[in-house]
Image 1 (cartoon, rainbow, N blue to C red):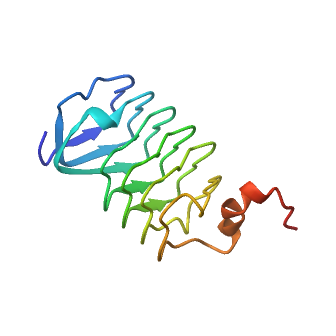
Image 2: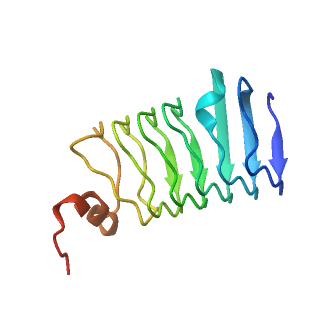
Length: 145
C-alpha cells in the first residue's frame, strides 16, 4: 500500500506478513493484536491518528520517524525496535513494553502512562514532559509526590 489512508476501519488481527506500507495513514481505526514485525520494511512509513492499537506488537520493527497521534497503545510491545525521531503525541501507553529499543530524539512530551527503563533503551535527546519523567523512574519503585 502506497500513499493510502484507512479511515474508520476495523483491522484487528489482520495479517501483515510481507505487506509494504509506504506513506500510509491510519485514522480512527481499531487495530487490535496486529504483529507489525512481519511487514516489509523497505520504505516503511506510517502514521496513526486517533487509533486503538491495543495488544499489538512492533517487536524488532523499524519505526523511525513514525507519528502516533492521540492513539491508545495499551500493552503494546515496542521491544528491540527503532523509534528514533518518532512522535507520541497525546498517546496512552498503559503497560506498553520498551526493551532494548532506540528512542533517540523520540518525543513523549504529551503522552502518558508509559514506563520506560533508561538503562536498557537508547534515549539520547528523547523528550519528556516534567510530569512524564515519573514514567522513567518506575524501576526504582520510588514515590514521587
